[in-house]
Length: 192
Image 1 (cartoon, one colour):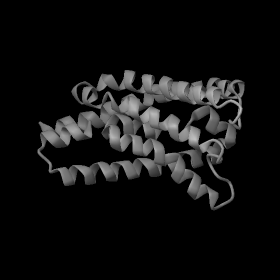
Image 2: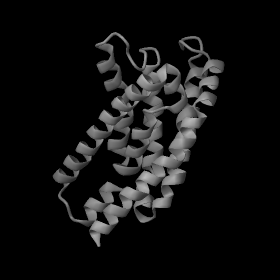
Image 3: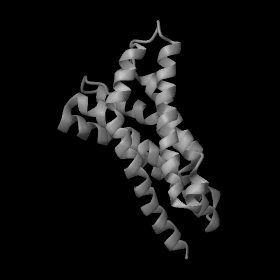
Image 4: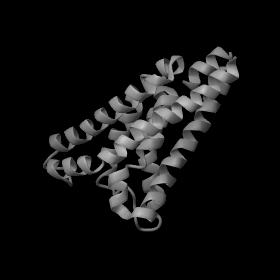
């Protein structure tokens, strides 16, 4: 969505890259901070239920296009792991890190496929988010099934976690598109 707006404003490639980089870094920071706040308030079960890292990644998918969004999806859990490892409580744990990197890559990529449509009509954010959530969770579950013997967790455990996270997914399926519609409104209004 941001890319389309910048192209219409005839912003140079260098400035477009800079703007999308700044937005992406801010969303990675949000993806690191938000889970910390949820875990402080609700403990580890709160993270499994509300899935706070997913929200900034979904925003990235809708806003910055596939390349930058997938970078946000991949680097959010990595940066979180590196920062939280310094205090001896890494989030996510190292065994889960590669799975989350792939899952959030899928979240960001699928949502980003709709970014041009979202620019045209903000309501496209709803299917973008829902399809991204379904795809990402399915890929995570599929990876655990495929790498079953090597995976540190089993399909039934991940399936239970997916069911536990449904409230978070439902809230994000409503909140993220509304945020995107609001952001879109300001972007489009500025262009008029």
